[in-house]
Structure formats: C-alpha cells, structure tokens
Image (cartoon, rainbow, N blue to C red; front, side, top):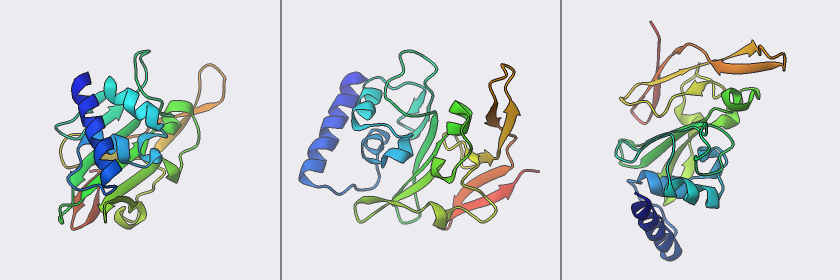
Length: 193
C-alpha cells in the first residue's frame, strides 16, 4: 500500500509539473494531494504525503471516501480535526469533492461555514461551488457525513453541551435532520421522517 501511494503521489507530482490541470475523474490519493487545504482540515503538503504513506481512519480508495480521525498515535498527516470527504462525478462527468471538517466535535470551537466545502473540477482546477449547490434550509454550520456509503448523506446541527469536567462547553453530532442527495447538478435535501 505504501509503495502504491508513493507511486501515485510521484505520478501526480510529475503530471502537475508538466500539466497543472487536474482532469476528471480524480482518484482519492490525487484529490488529497491537490484539493485546497480547507477540504482536508488544513493539512499541509507534507502532512498529506505522510497521510497517504500510511492512511489512517476509514480510507476507501475504491469508493473514494475518507473519514479521517486522529485518535491513535500512529495517525499520519497533520489535519486540524477529523474530516469527512467524498468524491463523485456530476452529470457532466466532472469530479465533485464534498468535505466537512468536524472542528466543533474535535476541539469545541463554534460551528462555522468554513468547516464545509464542496468543489468541482472546472477548467482543470478545483473551484468552490459550496453556496451554489447546498439547498436553502441547509446550513454550512451543520455536520455532514460525506463518507457514508450510498447516495444519501446524513446531515444535521451540532448540539452544544456542558462538559462534565467543568471546562466549559463542547459539541457533539446531533440527530440527523435529513439527508442530501446529488441530483440535477446540486444537492437536494430530504427531511427525516
């Protein structure tokens, strides 16, 4: 696995040196190396390579999904928090990368629109399309489990609670309010129940 990731990384680096355009479909390793840092919870270039050398968390190259969590001491990379990432192609065959960094869950900071990003390959580059593809009534401050299998992506609001150790408040994932499904060039929202 380590040799495969190194070979993939070298191929991506070599192709980027001669042709800076990214073409669809994009594999998971290539996406980790080329997405803007906010899509991978702030991981540095060096951290991305370390992560690909020894992927931790739930890393599924075939299904093109990641649930990165750094609860173990052997976790590679340097992200600021746990994150969920999913790759898929839209109706035009362009790769979409949907990402959520679970910072409120990880370190108790307030939920923020800067934790959720959706990118599309356009003219060989990752372009932020988040605000144009999330439906009204769905907040970028919510949590999104983009790593889930199947077409329906659970999402909902974070819930704040008082820590038992008396060190203030923290957040956990609240009950899902509904699901997102990609259709006709954007996510559609279906409420739970």
